[in-house]
Amino acid sequence: MLTEQTLQGVIVPIVTPFNQRGNLDVKSFKELVKRLVSKGIHGLVVNGTTGESPTVEETELETLISTARNEMGEIPLIVGTGSNNTVATVKKNTWVKSLGADAALVVTPYYNRPSQQGIIQHFQALAEADLPIILYDIPHRTGVSLELETVKAIMGMDHVIGLKESSGNIKRAFKLARSLTKPVLCGEDELFFASLCCGGKGGILASANLDSDQFVQVYELFRAGKIEESSQRFDQLLPLIQFLFSEPNPAPLKWLLAERGHIRSDRLRLPMTSISSETAKKGVQLL
Ligand SMILES: O=C(O)C1=N[C@H](C(=O)O)C[C@H](O)C1
Image (cartoon, rainbow, N blue to C red; front, side, top):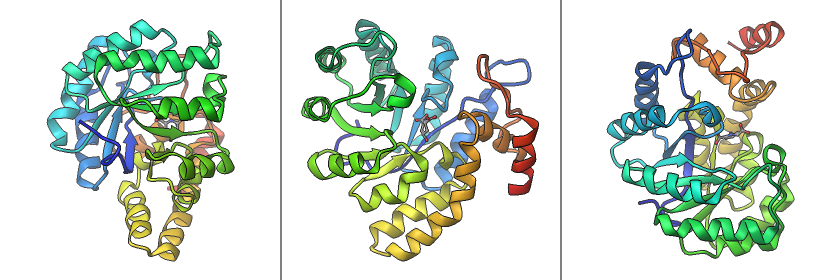
């Protein structure tokens, strides 16, 4: 099980590769996991936003979890399970735990506009599944704003081991990293280095599906006190990060992974679509 002491470093929300017909491409997924593990990542998220969780079927998720588990050894496996239905999320957490998950990444309940108290109770209810939780705050995707007091209340729960902070507001990230005793992980790739400077303990970074060893080095250099070297290494990654978020994630990421031969197709499931030809031209320049 993952704990607040071991939750740190570069954690990669892996893409879910599909073939041209839109079916799960298990072979590409397995190769991808192996490659990421060989690059020294500190954890993996299956079924995150980057893994196109809204379109992944339960049987497919079972395959993804067991395939990843087999390749990962002791490296923590986190599974995205968040939804806007508390009972369903408890059930899903219990289920993914039985499949070998070390923790669940749980986004704030979106769309039905719960009160702050409702959000607190949602996370409280997840204790029943007995699986460590990482709170995922990403207001621009969920449409839900968490008050600082709400974050503190959730982070005070025993089964909640950390926060993935994706508000894009570095002042807020700074405040949280300073005031919380549990790890705050950056979920806004462009702010990764800034977040480490604010006291963040690592990041859950879609960009780290590519050039993973470079992201690991940014983190390791920073931890070793080599701040300038870490900063320079991160600057080198910025054009990649900016390209990857020039259209909704994970479309540019899948395109680049396919171009580099790491997956066999850049296919996404609707309503997500592949990148435009203009973005592809920019990608070719980057390559
Ligand atoms: O899947 C994730 O986890 C991430 N998703 C974010 C997003 O797509 O908005 C980006 C972040 O790098 C990780």
